[in-house]
Amino acid sequence: MTTFDDITTEEKKDTEMSDAKTETSPPEYSSTERPRVEQGGELDLVFALDCTGSMGSYIQSAFTSIESIVNQIVTSEKTNLRFGLVAYRDHPPQDSTYVTKVHPFTSKPTEMTKYIAGLSATGGGDGPEAVASALYQSFQMPWRPNATKIVIIIADAPPHGLGESGDGFPNGDPDGHDPLQIARQMSTHGITIFSVACEPALSGYRYAVDFFTAIAKMTGGMMLPLTSATLLPEVVIGGAREQIDLERRMEALRLDAEKYEKEKGGKVNEKDMLKHLHQQMLDRGEHLTQLSVENPYQQSHEAETNVANLMTYESLSTASKNLSAVKGSRLTSKFSAPSASSHSGFFGGAPPKPTTSSYSGFFGGAPPKRTTRSLFSFGGPPTSAPSAYAPPPSALLSMAPPPPGMASFGSSSMSMPMPAPTQQISISKAEVSEDQVFRMYSKMKSTASKMD
Image (cartoon, rainbow, N blue to C red; front, top):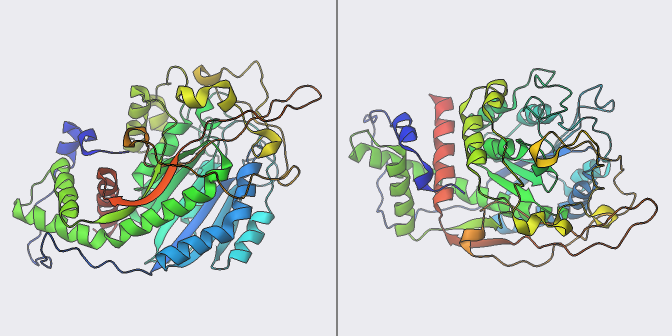
């Protein structure tokens, strides 16, 4: 979660705003008058889904819940909703089936269900996958100009070229797509990325968590680390509702920013601007939808620096040379205990990645790719997530979902799943947060840069 104190002195200098344009004055309204927020509008939502061997439980979760997701979003937000799907695997010779498979936008839940029913989880080759190609194809979708635009990328492996060991394409995407540059293009076109990180697999790589955090922040989205596929529907619904709520307030935020900039003679540093905008919304008593998720990650200076570098450097090839491995487990003790450190097997998760001598865990390279498994061979997770309650704010990441039960695999038998810790999630109406104001302001600036 971003707070205003996270903005450094250097960032203040870099983000000092230029002289205000005074040809026209923004419309005036009282600082205590709550702006009218209209329901309705359009939502274009694309799933970019890793369909390699370990992702069967996430495909199954999407399949069983897509109608519920549509109904809850449409009912609560009165929005015109379209879904699209980009399934991705890897480039040959790592995977010989397909790199990406694109399904166009549809407003029919039954059509989207058919898309997902045709998917299976298999293949993958090396650790990294065709993430850059998935982002590129998502960006190329025919987005409606006035819609809230969201890409939900669901992944348990990083892109090629990030610096992971055993990468079959260490120089990056063989088709020349740079995922950081694509994320910036998405940002300027108003497309928000929500990164669903499938844990504990993703944190087994050195830099994957930092990469997916960076592209989410670059586009005004959220990093959503999931420890269980059963929570995918709740996260999709909560994330979409929150983003719709934020974008409905963008115009009022823009007017507040222009007015404050004019009052200050055109020179306002970003931290002061954000504090002012936040206070204006608090004074008006504005309450927004908020998705809050218990943070499974430990705080790490290396991780924070990696995210900043990935957001700053122009290309992945340059950024990857300036990343530092995080020492020890990225997960907190609650989620890195033995019962939480493996997949949930046939009871809803993916088979565990096989242990090989080339895998050095958190300190070394990428985990080896997993056993091939088709989607419905062993059934999916429960269709409803367990009830969960919001933990104290200090324990929240303001972003993501939870974990599954575990099964151990012997040479000829399988034990019953062990209890897994429950990751806490809440969706509520609450006072606007600093993180929400930061996301709105960042999106306002990036989309404005496209028009300049």
